[in-house]
Structure formats: C-alpha cells, structure tokens
Image (spheres, one colour):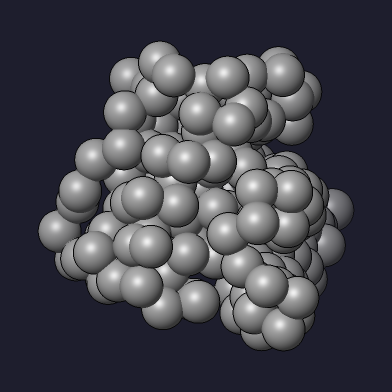
Amino acid sequence: MTGAQAAERILRSQGIDYVRVGHVRGNLTDHYDPKNKVLNLSDTVYNSTSVSAIGVAAHECGHAVQDKVGYFLLNFRGSLVPAANFGAQLSWPLIIIGYLFGGAGGTLVKVGILMFCAVVLFHLVTLPVELDASRRALRLLDENGILVEDEVKKTRKVLGAAALTYVAALAASILQLLRLLILFGGQRRNDD
C-alpha cells in the first residue's frame, strides 16, 4: 500500500469522502489544506510503500479528522497564519529600523517585538495540533489494520522524531523572543 492509498483508506474509514488526496512536488511538503479540503502528499510519500511514508500520510489524515470534528486548536492555528506570516516578515525590519532611528526603547522596536509574539503564539499552538494529529494517526493505522504492531511502533518513532522539530521550532522562537526582550524590553530612557 502506498502513502496515497493509505490516506484514501483512512479518510474513507472516517467518513471523509469530501477530501481529495493530491500530489505535491518536493520533500517534506506534505500538508492538509482545510480550506480546499485537499490532503497533499509529497514525492517521497505519495507513491512510497515505506512505513515512514504511510505514517506521514496517516498524520496528515489526522489533520483532516481534526477538521471534521472541529478541533479548536486547528481552527485557531489557521486563524493565526496571516498574523504569524506578517509578524515573521516585518518584525525584524521594524526592530532594526526602530533601533537605528529611535533607540532600544523606541515605538517601532516595541511594535516589532509585539509582531514577533504572533510567531511565538503560532508555534505554541502548532505543537499540540501536531501531537494530536500524530496520536490520531497511530490510532487510525491500528484501527484500519494498515500496519502490524511492529510497524506501528516504528511509525510511532518516526512521528515522535517529527514532533521534535515542532518542539525545536517553539523553543527557538521563545528563546528569540526572550533575547529580544532582554536586548530591548528592559531599556528605559533616562530623561533626567
């Protein structure tokens, strides 16, 4: 069974016949698009029969199930995407320009730091969404008999390793925010 076939089987088992399984170029480009109801699988997952590929496909199906049941954090994360993208693009230029023209305590620096907070919030919400999708994936693989017990254990390891990337992204964004607050947040002007 390929990753695409596993995804189709899992989706149908959950009564999700309105989500299309699509193929997207690249590696690590797998994602579920809740707006267009498309589960996109990358080159390394779509036609692959590896345990890892099936695990990744099942993980994306976990997001489709989250969407079906109205999982709050998935919807909240989706609403954060524009603010997080905007914050990621503009926070640093605002901080740098603000520092150059207004000093460490300037308004633009503060606005830049506030915009970076949207990035941190996005990562904070993403972590439980991804962990939940992996939990659902493992259950769905077992319930549908797609993988045997030993393969499910291997998939658990793969999905666990993938989850660590979200932990790392969250930790990096929190540390970056702390760094910004230490560098610029505690600065006060002495106008005496």
